[in-house]
Image 1: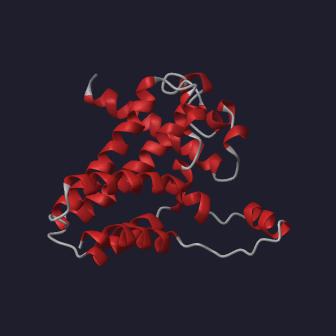
Image 2: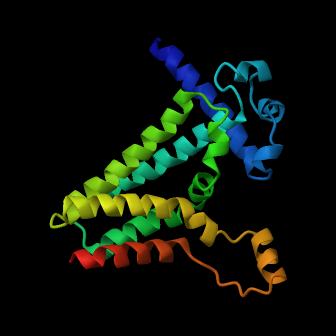
Length: 208
């Protein structure tokens, strides 16, 4: 594939992803149609199928793009010469506080997306997730050299399990608030920064 052809393909994919993202801001995933996505692009609906077979694949591409942006932020953290535990926790917490949309995307039921998506689309998300996990490991190697390899791997695994569930607890949609009020449950706002910072401090302080 020529460079020009690759650039055109990426440009059109991004246009489709942007159209889906715009719709997703105000509509539920299930209510978005390929026809509506096509209406927000410069392409015909049939042309979209040259790049994505369905809206599930577009959603996965959006997740991969947002994951890559967070991965870039992690790399900036890893580029520091050194960091204390507090500084590391603050940096990771800030990187996620700024990306509430990303947390919302990754909290979606991925099994529902995977059922109708091609392997290469799933692999794109897996690759960028792996890159993020490796960057976290790089940070641990660099900033906390006394940690054992087992401790680093355990933190990496537990942190990513925690990451995928943050939005479930820190999400504060109007529907959730109404449901809590209806159930007579007191609502205490949870800040992404606070829960991430606390998780990292409590998990890693035992290593020092």
